[in-house]
Image (cartoon, rainbow, N blue to C red; front, side, top):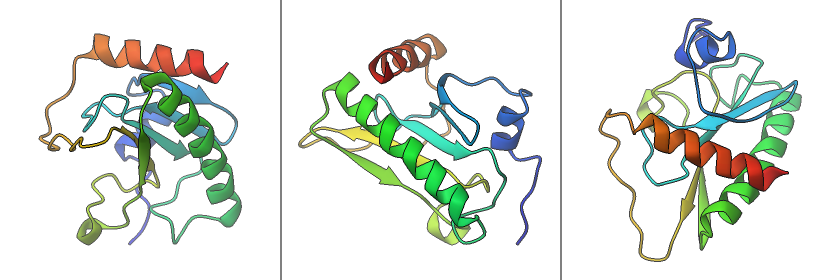
Length: 139
């Protein structure tokens, strides 16, 4: 399987599709998931295109994980979560639907379950507000 440079995350990186940006540096981009399974559900992607974890350069993974750690800390702080999940899927059999390496950050609370991934987009005003709150926590 090869990397498709026209996947939705590649289009976000090229500015062809908008996103609710949380953080960006020379290596990574973090933004809100438009179909969140919990409030504060966000994604971190490398700017270097790779299909998944196994075809990514180790340096790309390292830079991406630095951003995951930074954004996860801000997300937990913002939502006063009891904990968080990091999810990363590789290939269809594992649940990957966008074939660009990415990490999900899900702030969690005791007893909370995830909303189903129905394909329905969340309210963009809510996503924009969540992104702004997480950005504020990064500063």
